[in-house]
Length: 298
Image (cartoon, rainbow, N blue to C red; front, side, top):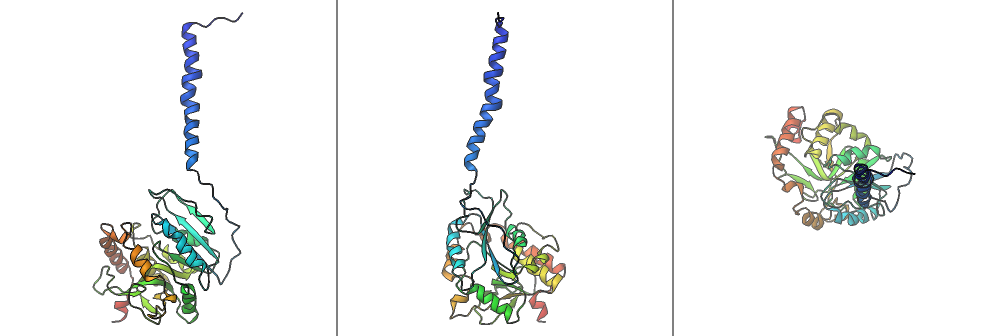
């Protein structure tokens, strides 16, 4: 005959099999089940990476808080006169819900960290194409932008190309008063500048220069740092391809799109301390040997 449990034994059994079990097994399992709701099951898995190509282009887009414009950007890239071989999307961590973009992009990387502007440049090291095209999330390239960049290189302008160029003042610090590109002077010939932003186009080999030295700031200034390091360590200049006044099809951005989206509160240039940080970055790069255009022209 089985011995009857004492009151203390019964309480101990009840605690271990009911209460303790709930807290140590069932409750964590329930939490895990709820957490699974946040798991991303991609609508489409990426194909195997293609063989290296010495001709084609990989475009990389970034999502942080303005993902609502991504579909329009991808459509603009697919409709280029020379479309990219692949379109990749880098998703930084933000307060917004993470979305699955695999149905409209060739490759998607989701990060649980906000790498700000640098993650896309790190990802670009993985492309299998000769050229990389990067775009800010408030830029809508026009149909002949990629062809424009390729023609610029073919015609002898070798360097980092971009859609919005800045020629810095001689007296030091950062100023964007002298701009060239979609939101500045519209020239019909390639123009050498100190740095470019908004849209980049470059030979993948140039990426090594952005990592030659640690950035002065990880918070901002990837455009400054890239151009400064490329010129200092590789004698690689920075240029804005033609943005002819009467042919917007060659432009890096549709002007009404860039100006309206760029004024949103999420735009980085509206954040406190933006200009002072960029002043510091420019001054640090110049102190380290970066010779800007204003010095070259003396």
